[in-house]
Image 1 (cartoon, rainbow, N blue to C red):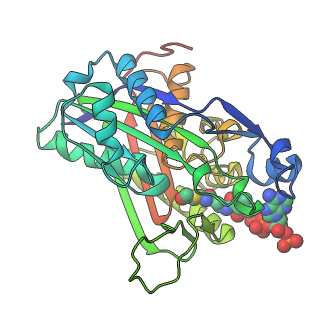
Image 2 (tube, rainbow, N blue to C red; image 1 turned 90 degrees about the vertical axis):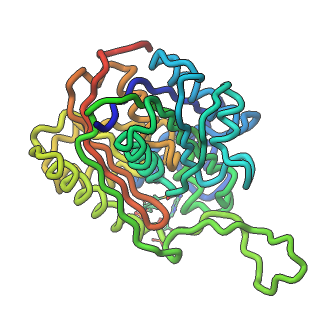
Length: 325
Ligand code: ACO
């Protein structure tokens, strides 16, 4: 017994920031961003808080699943930075949606959704739960350096949630981590202790883009290959790939390495940029609601991010086609 995905729901901020607007902030241009990343626009929080977004995604997923908040046995939120250091964002979601189950956060950066799926799987296997809510959301606009053109053009805000129920649709799942804070990290920033002797670092994203790029292509190619093999399937059995939406060139190179038709990779990076842990479920929700996913489809999902972490899995889709627009 593992789980099945009963429903999904997304939440993104209203404000759309185009590449042209970004080029008024840093020395860049639409052509560079599109050709190097595939990103045309991203959503940026202005008046929305991460709590509002996580709660909106949670409620949308519950509605899509036909499950009431009172039926939840566990809430996991994957995020790098919720509203507070403590309580966890999952506890805030629990309060706001009216649930009464245990709740906690996981932080695996962009791989967070798949890490959360694996944690949830353990609860289903131990028969501790019947319904689990996963909410994956990041607010990266709050922790990127808006003066650094090599990173600020890549990211956006938003995410999505999924409600899991008992079932047998998780066919394989793999997580990896290789501790490395040199190529990608976001420091905490301030330290309020007057006794602390180390220099403070700005709480903004530092990334060696080229190094992460190489890691990402390798992670996506090997991650999908292993997850499909572990599921006892061939790459040709995969109907749809939901990849982490970081850069269209990473996705295209992985598709080529795997010899999987590019058309099978669901992509929305052009609209949202990299939303970190929100990225994979946001793509899953849009693929589901747009009718791309059909009942019985074999879906491979893969993500990579700070840590350095990776997560990949294969699931069978068990919902009817297009649910709503
Ligand atoms: N606009 C115009 N020029 C730019 C910009 C910009 N926004 N950014 C960089 N450049 C310039 C550079 O200065 C450089 O100029 P130079 O040749 O004169 O030195 C040139 O463009 C090429 O820069 P590169 O860094 O070599 O560009 P590259 O093709 O490698 O693309 C990118 C950079 C998009 C960051 C790519 O390396 C990438 O996608 N890396 C992976 C990032 C990622 O996937 N992160 C995911 C994890 S995030 C997380 O976990 C939170």
